Length: 201
Image 1: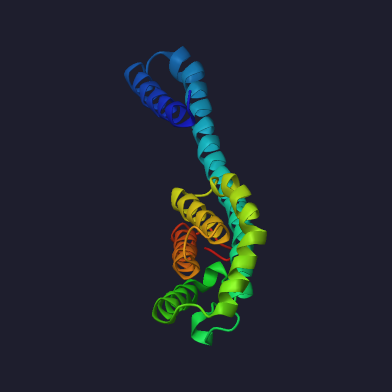
Image 2: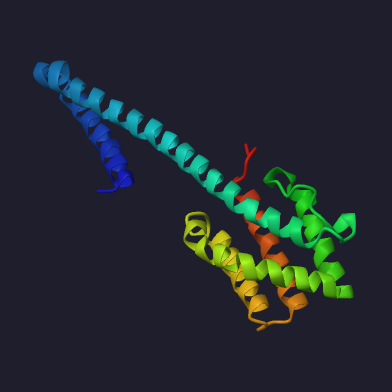
């Protein structure tokens, strides 16, 4: 039996007990002893379920925020290690979750810059080296990301795919990097939308 079903059974029981108490008000045994006890127990159980449910949801959200923060660290390293020489407007300052608008604007600028100008040879080499060393870590973290939302999972899978594509030369580096950045942006957006970041209210 699920918690939701149990909750509604308790609500239904309270209504039934209330009706019985009203209809059989003269019956001293029902109204004076057993029925009030049953009503009291049902109310206590409902309160426990509501409080426990809120506490459980809060704990679950905090656990997901910890997971999101650890995964975000890998994205921060990717952004810092590979785009250091780009214009300042193209670089997220710290890429923290609470800096959502700055993150989104910087990623948009970075994508537009690469689409307009491509990547210089030095950047291509750096990104290829990075993907060669980090692609397995990103792939191995896919089960961890699956504990967050569906869009977190989808964006991370695509990031891992394009890192592998860069390393295997399956995709042109500049095109694959743009796809990675778009999915980093999607990951950040999903965290903000669901309040799964450090400092969310």
